[in-house]
Image 1: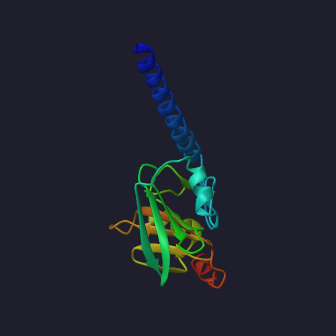
Image 2 (image 1 turned 90 degrees about the vertical axis):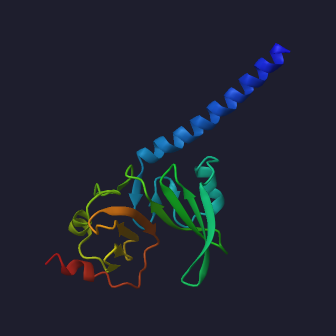
Image 3 (image 1 turned 120 degrees about the vertical axis):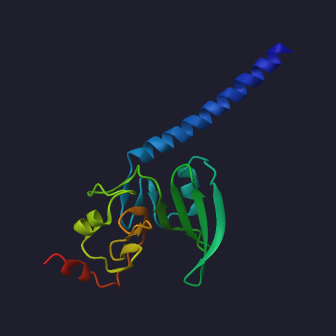
Length: 177
């Protein structure tokens, strides 16, 4: 009887260690990952099917999932609170359209900008936003949007999205003259 209990405990411990190793591996990879505007975050790429993303996340379950509507289109939003990431998929194609970064652990490639950075750093690097409001700095031609905190000076989230080619990208150069 004690051998069976020992075997069950050993099997359960092995499964837990394996699950922890998978999650640790993913988090470690993300700790070294970069936010690449218009492309993705770490190994996670825009345009990939939901099945690929789920494989990359190594069976990590989302904290929440919900159906949303954006610009008249149905989307699926999967939030991974522990990872500080949210994914927005097109409902019909099941392909990744946006990654929203909520953790300070990821940097925008070649900038050092991260959640918690100041809006002034974003403007210094990317120049004046092409689109935006008091609460966001949007660079649709680059494929990145910075959402600002209530103080309108600090980045609270970074949205990586597919670049829009039809946006006038010359506006962001006006502030650099």
